[in-house]
Structure formats: C-alpha cells, structure tokens
Length: 227
Image 1 (tube, helix red, strand yellow):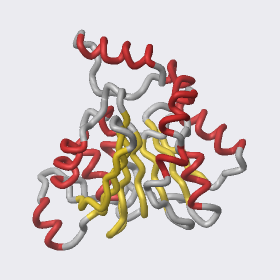
Image 2 (cartoon, helix red, strand yellow; image 1 turned 90 degrees about the horizontal axis):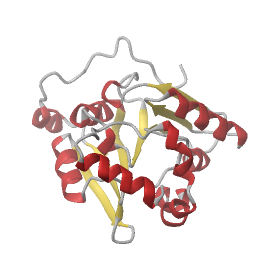
Image 3 (cartoon, helix red, strand yellow; image 1 turned 120 degrees about the vertical axis):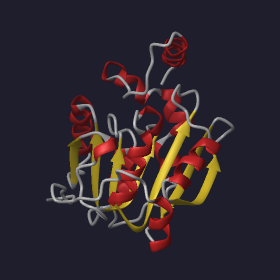
C-alpha cells in the first residue's frame, strides 16, 4: 500500500466509479510495500488472532499471500491452511510464495466469499484481513463464514486505514452480531487500525435468533479441506 494508491482509491470512490470489489492484481506488488510491513506486518497482525498448531484455517481474500505465509507457519505441519480468492492470479502468487517457503500443506480455491465451496463445520478459524469491505454481498458472506466454521470456531478480522474499504469497529460489531457471532476481543493498532476476534454461535438459541431467509444450508455439493 502506498499513499498514491490510497489517494487514487478515495478519488475513484468520490467520483462514483469505485464499487465494492477485489483489490486489482495489477497493483499487487504494492501489497508488500515497506510502509505496510512497518505498520501492519504479518507477525503483528496475526499475533492478535491466536492461531494454534493443528488448526484448519481459511484465509478469505488471501491476495498474494502476504498474511497467508505467517498463518501457515503458526498452524504448522499438523494444520491445514486454505487460501481463497476471487482472482486466480492472486492465488498463483500465493502458491508460489508458500511453496518457496516449503509450506505445501495448503489448499488454493478460486471462489466468491458469498458462496464458499466447503461443507459445514469445515474450519476452526477464518481470517478476513482488509477484505470484508470489498465484498459486495457482505451479509451473505458472513452467513457463509458462519456455516463453514465449526461450533465455537473463530472469525478474525483486521481493518486498516487508509484503506478505502475500511469498516469502522462499530459497523463491524453491528454486522457480526446480526450474523450470529459473539465478540471475544477487539484491539486497536495505533489509532487507524484494529483487530477483532469473534466466536461463532451455533447454539439452538443462536439459530432461532438468526432465522435468515434464504440462508444456504445444503452441503451436498460442498467439499471439506483436503478432499
């Protein structure tokens, strides 16, 4: 991320041209900028997520694997990381990065967050780092994340200004509570970024409170990580 790219993103939004959508692959090299490493380095951000060895982790909107590499290291050989992105070019770069580090116990899936191709209860932890604001159907994506998480599983979010798609803590809290998640911890990182960890509520009471119409429940065509 550079200030020039940020300024361009905000200008496009003001002109009404920018809709929620994926970060362009043409600008992918900027994701590894020195400024981003200084302020939002993988160890700093993922340190707030409490990933554990052996976990099944889904990295939604993985991009070039900037945070995927650290996630794979934290869950170790006994865990499994699945990297998901809507852009195939991003997944190619993520695969190159992880394989170069010898981290080959990883899956790569090109798909939309609003229609996750996994069976229910497939993951222990889902990561969403500066990605939720880019998803047009965010409410549906949150329902899908809830579906693929095991009971008690966690969704960890990081939002970082000056990202044009930044979601405020209050807005995130409202959306996640409405989608069946319970807040565990939210931490400020400087005054312009934060991390937030949420636990999925799959109790009978939680299901009754949700009762979303049209919520996807069928798993006949879904897969589990590693299949």
